[in-house]
Amino acid sequence: MKRIITLTVNGEPVEGAVEPNRTLLSFLREDLGLTGAKHGCGLGDCGACTVILDGKPVNSCLVLAVQADGREVLTIEGLADNGKLHPIQEAFIETGAIQCGFCSPGMILSAKALLDESPKPTETEIRTAISGNLCRCTGYQKIVEAILAAAGTAQGKEVS
Image (cartoon, rainbow, N blue to C red; front, side, top):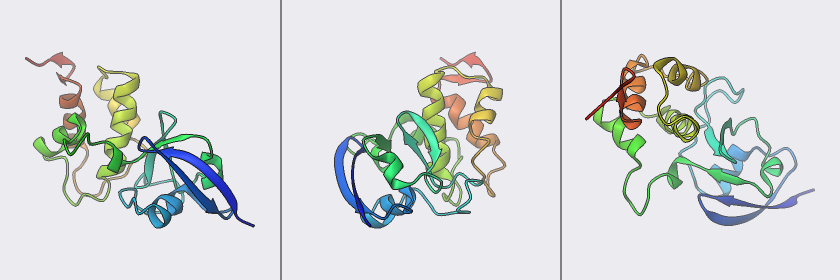
C-alpha cells in the first residue's frame, strides 16, 4: 500500500506516493527526474548515490523514501545557485577532479557536508569524509586538491 510522503528537495516542497520498500534514490530519479545521484552498487558501498539528508551525507540507495518524510534533501541538482556553480563544483572542474563524472555528484556532496561542518579541513579529514565514495578514474589526489581549494587551503596552508 502506497504512503504519501512530503519532503523538501533542493529547497522545494515535494509530495509523492511511494511503496514502503521504495528507496529514496528511486524516488529522486524516477519520480522527480533528479538523475544526479547514480545507482551504483545498490549496497551502500560506492557512494554514487550520495545525497545530503538533513545536513548529513547518506547513501540514498539505503534510505527508504518513507524515512525521508518531513525531512530536507539536497541533491547535486540543488547545489548550483541560479545557474552559477557552487565553489566546490568549480574547484572540481579547475583541478581536473572530474573525469568520467559518475562519482562526482556523490563526491561533491560529501565534500559539501564536510565543509559545512569543518570549513578548513585537513587532508586526513577530507580523505575520511570521502572514504565512502569510490572513484575508478582519478586516484583521489585531484579530488582532495579540489576540496582543499574549495576550502581556500592548499596542504593545510592559507591560499592568497
